[in-house]
Image (cartoon, rainbow, N blue to C red; front, side):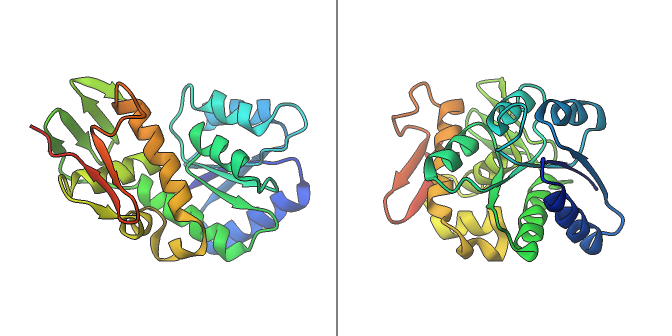
Length: 228
């Protein structure tokens, strides 16, 4: 496993690297203290996971996230002191897969990385088809009306859960457990799910504000409408 840390605080890089190497001694940890350098490393080194700070000295982490998403669907975990909901929502809408706020607990960070890797590593799974939707879990390839749609690992995990239960409502808790594992109750999973569902609607619906393909039942969960 190759992990890239884009962070300008040397102490945090050291702490993250140590935690990863203790948990996964066979892993390789790369680092960049500038956003532009981090983007270059994503392109040249093809890491399995990116851990990204939002407060970088040259360009904002949001710009780094946006630029990476232009050419890569690598899982991105945000590590930031920004705790305002608007910042977290913005990062998720730009394509981040998860976030951890500073100061962080090493076990929580490792748990989030493990959850991302689990979503990334679905292999040898049979393709799913719901009407005009075709999805291959092993490659995260999604086709809707024969048009290819790019998904992040988190978006793919949520959509797969909805496709496997087509026409039925999947509870918020069940979707969150699928995405983040047993530790999902440690954070505001309903708010995060709402952002990911909005991103999926933007990619699939002609009008993301209308509930045609992905339905919501407040207080219950989400459902993929039965496809004809």
